[in-house]
Image (cartoon, rainbow, N blue to C red):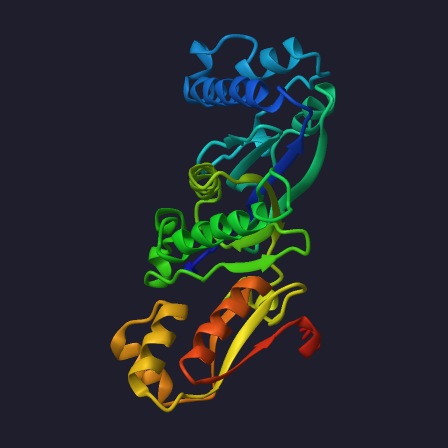
Amino acid sequence: MKIRIWNAFASNNSGSYTIVGRFGPDVALALGGRLRAALVAHAAWLDLTSADREAESPLHRFLREEGVEVSEHVGTGDGWPAYGSPPEVFETADQILVHAPYTVTLPRELGALFYRHGGRVEVELNHAHAPVLLEILTWRTEAFAEPAATERDRRQSAFRADIEDGMLDDAMKRPKDEGVRWPPVFEPTDWGGMRTTLAPIDLVLAARQVQDLAATHGLELRISVSEARVAHGDPLALLRAYTTHPGRHQVVLWKAGPDPVATIRALRDVSGCTLAEAHERLASVPIEVVVDVAAREAMAAAETLVKAGCDAQVLGPQHFAAKRP
């Protein structure tokens, strides 16, 4: 008799599923709430033994009542997370996002539901294996003329500062990567908005936190998602290759002024650095004092430095060639 022993390995090649729909006024919030309730009920229904289940699943009933043509076994088998958490729903005033972090797919009827209510599918990432990036476009609805533009820039700057100060850390933690949090990428638009791209570990939590943060600063927002081009390392690496942005400016300090105290005071005023940081930075001139700011902010910073006797210059998009990966 011969006995053979070996190790067998199996792999479930599941990825994530994400769909984003956009709707007309007064549709997304109500529909998103109903869809969330249906998905929660469907997950609970699947947890029951077959003998305890109703003949019609909650998801099947919901879609049928919403006027969607439904397949008999909707939300079962490969069309539902077998090992991961149930799909989550996030909605804004005009968008709905549905996300399952680990599944083969989700029902095609979700897209049909969006179209049934006059919406359209903006993005569908079916079976994504690389990290899913969350893109947030924020803007202020009021007119762009002065002085509204100044207030708009102030709000965007405060929104960005809160993100950089860790307001989204709960959604960005990566325990398997020893706490690595990939820094967001901020890209101003040429009409006064700002595009913020994140690589969260919890997509829906990040979207909710960003929504609350935008509301705090009086900003409108719109979301989108994309699959990162790289599965390992910094998922935002390609975006970081764009080092300059249309309509944005920076201030370069070429030479400190004759009065060290006045120079340090001016540097701290325009950059917000500490006294120790100011001394350290001045030892490395020329330096970029502020980067990626509006023209008026850059000119104000340069003026403060010049008044202190420094040699400072504002550099704008016309001074740079866009760098592509």
